[in-house]
Amino acid sequence: MSAPKEADDVKLVASLFSPEEKILQEVIVELQAAYGVTDWVSPPLFFDRTRYYEKEMGWPLHRRFVSFQRLIRPEAIVDIKLQTNELEKRYLQEGKRKINIDPGYVALERLVLATGKNYTHRIHLSKGIYADLTLVFHQRSFQTLAWTYRDYAEPVVIGYFNDIREHYKNQLRGLNG
Image (tube, rainbow, N blue to C red):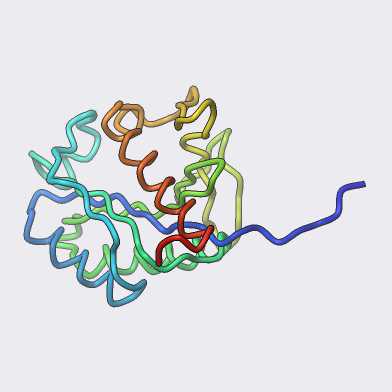
């Protein structure tokens, strides 16, 4: 029989994209007010692996990944996703989103994204929010899965998450704040 054990705290991360770089900067500030300071912000990127959002949001789309200094409980991702959905609503223009925020977390074993969309590989957590297992850590690097979004499968993005994981691992060891 297995003995239940509480999970470690995890590293909150988010992907943001918008047709306006200015909105990205504003939302990062709002996220910091809610979840504490960021300890890493990606360089400016283009969200160009799919045109899925073009009709709603426009084109081109600017992207940033962020990670936060303060660790969270894994189950907190449900409320964080609901809160980021509300933040997205504040930026609606004529019923269309101007910002997409995908929160998730890095654990030593995995990258999980939170979503309101059910699918075969997604596990319902609560309040209509699902956990999307996006990357798994194996053989010293994050690895993709059959359903991993193409943009998360890019080597540069995997490198970002490997670096975030290393920082997180050091946080758990008490080697940095």
